[in-house]
Length: 115
Image (tube, rainbow, N blue to C red; front, top):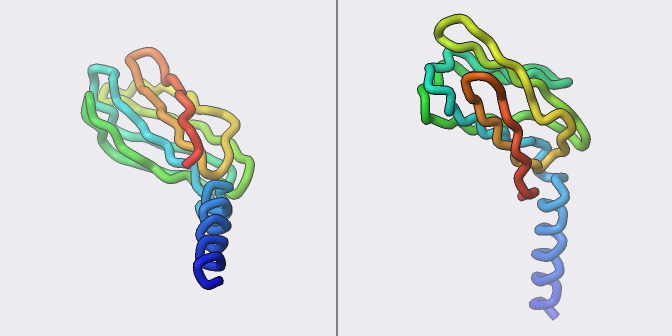
């Protein structure tokens, strides 16, 4: 009996976790493949903004974006020479994992699986 209760609790906990109820965040992985230094990253979303400073060419950073349920965001990167690019995945839900790949001319979004 105790084993059945423990199994039920484990299954329910995992289901809630997969549904995003315990993790109201989108994980945004920013990868700099531009050949230049990114001096500033800004992710603007409906609940605020996430900022990160310098990201060298070839480096990556994981940034959590608060998203309780359905949401969206815009990413803006500024290069050391002052040029800027903007983009973003648009529609996201809590639990999503997104790669934002920064090149010299654009920001490409790649959706990953839910956690």
